[in-house]
Structure formats: C-alpha cells, structure tokens
Image (cartoon, rainbow, N blue to C red; front, top):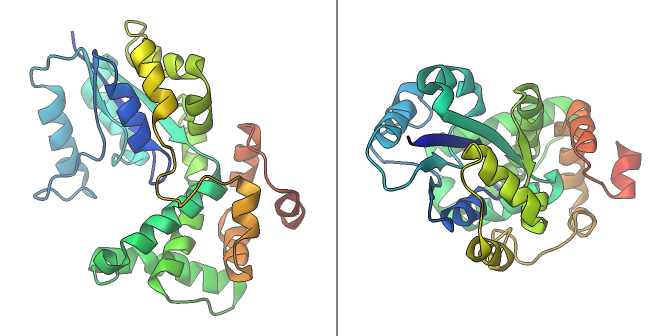
Length: 259
C-alpha cells in the first residue's frame, strides 16, 4: 500500500534540501514544488488535480509526497480527500536567516519577477501594510519589497502551530540524525528508516543556498539597514515571536530588547 505525505511550508524554509534528503532513501519519492505550467497553483482544484494524478498512479516507491507549494490552509480539505494514507507535517526555520534567504532569492530573480503581474500584486500588500503601520515611506525597489514580503510571511508560524501538525525545524533536521529519522518514520508510519547513505548525504548537502554564505542570525541582523530592521519589527507579529520562542529559537539581544 502506497502512503502519501505533504510537508507544508512557504519559501526559503529548506524544503528543497529536505526533498533531496528524503529522496536519498530507496523507499521514498519526494517532489519539490510540483508546478506544471497549465495549472494555476493558487486555485485549490488545480493543485489537488496534480495530487490526485500523483498519489493515485502506480509507483515503485511505497512512500510518495511533496515538500513545497501546497498551502497549509487547504490541509483540512486535502486530508478529507486522501484520508488515513496521508501524513502531513510543517517545516519551519529561524525567521532571520529565512527572511535573508528569501530576500537573496528575490534579488536573483528580480529580472523575472518585477514585471510579472502576480509578483507585482504580491509585493504590493506588504508595502502598503508597512506604510500604514509606520506612516513612513519605504523603498519601492522590487528587491526591498521582497524583503518586506518575507518579513510578513514568517507570521505563517501561527497557522503552523494552530494546525496541530508535527513541526520539524530545519536546524534540527540538519544537525540531528535522530530527528531526520523521526521524520522518515513519521511519514512512513514506522516502515522506513534512513540508512547510512542517506545520513551521509544529510551531512554533505548545502543548506541555505540562496544566501551567499552561512551566517548566524545575529550576524545577518546586524548587517540589515535601519529600514529593513524597522520592517522586520513592524511586520512580524508579537504572537509570532512568541511561537518561535516556544520552539526554542534564540534571537540577538538587541532584537529581544527592541521587541
């Protein structure tokens, strides 16, 4: 019997890295961002049609799933459709390096996105909210808007906590063989354990490839402009900081003070 899984997350959480890790097992087939051009992936019926096609076809793998591009707000409807064979979880990451990673990605893809109507609209909301909260004018540069959008999106931690799904921290998956195996056992209902080849790949896969080099949250935060720091403190909600604290994430001392 084939089992299905979905790892819910938004961008720059490490979902591509996680897909590569899971694919190192001979028993798991994991797709990252199942995006096909003919489908509108903001529409439930279109995305679920892909899930139906993928989950209900014959596979050589007993465990198949996705690690990105399926919105968490669809979880209840998806669970009702696919039933007990579906295992779901949320993937999270420290918000400061996550924001930086998403920002770097937007900088790289500026030439592709800045004239795209979808991205123009997506960037408009965070800018208007930020201006309303602070009553100040912020940069309308596309990459800066990408930073503002990333700040706002880390509030998704609230939906992840309230979903009551298992939450796996990227940092624990990277550093702990036990946590990586805990995830594999969860999505396979105890039938799959990551072996030595998978663990070796775990140690060698680069994490945070959107960023130029690996830095601590404090190093990243110190390097932000005053405008970016203000956006961060204005758009990330206090409740979100509280949930990140509960998950064990630590913040630079000045961040604690300014909060």
